[in-house]
Length: 350
Ligand code: GTQ
Picture (tube, rainbow, N blue to C red):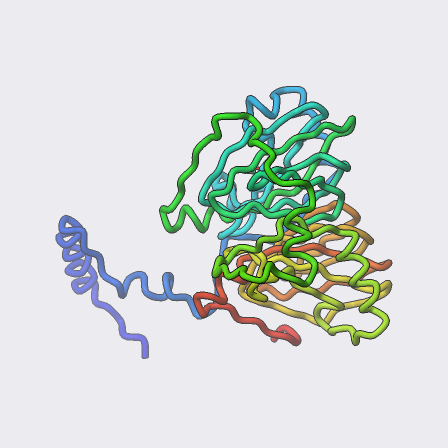
């Protein structure tokens, strides 16, 4: 039952708060319900970035600064509710990166994990651990924490991809380290396709025994992903909330491909309308194929190929699609699951 506070009590309390503030103490009861909320409460809002618009500005940035000078020529996708914080969701960073023909984004490494989801171009490369992987539209490429990586484009067209990094998570833990490589491009020590052959062919080297939380496969090519979805659709029942949804894995553990960022690819067949779904992992979606509308917390976002949109934590989400649609997505689900925090709910709002 609510008790009334006399003006006298209120004055005494205020005076008390002031006195203890000098000792770096503060009363929990004034903030408890704000810091331990009954439901997730976030400044992150639903938002859509139209590729066509973002691309124009990205190409303009291409005339303003070189990849070498910028180190990474990226336009950050900043959540409208989190402006000034370089965040797409509370826990994740996203940006669109451009590497023009003939350019190199110089080698460096950092504690942050990075993913690339290729949006435009064909045959540019990312080098990781001495291996260059060519990048094609729809490929999902990872850069594990503290591995040197450089990006190059020896083709005649721009390469553009979506970067996803766990920058806010690493900042939260005050665990960021970074350094440059002495050379712009790290030496190539392994042939293209080496990690795919060694770890991505449903086999592992016989004595391979790594407890690493990072996948040894660093390119998950779209051609294989798409073919898998197409083959499965003949057999699978469509999940009411997800259509046909797969997660990218570390073949050595069966866990997610990255230690902090979970990644997914889903197929929604022409005309499909999903049932409402919500989960505690705010999610970034990148459209690979198709057109549709996603409604998040009552906000309608109409999308087409290459558009990017975001759904905050614990808001009801539905998709309806006009034609066969393929959506890549990433979130902090893997981190939340390790910490015992992740929740999901299917059904109807209220
Ligand atoms: O390609 O290494 O979007 O270090 C932000 C930071 C990309 C990268 C980003 C980075 C990179």
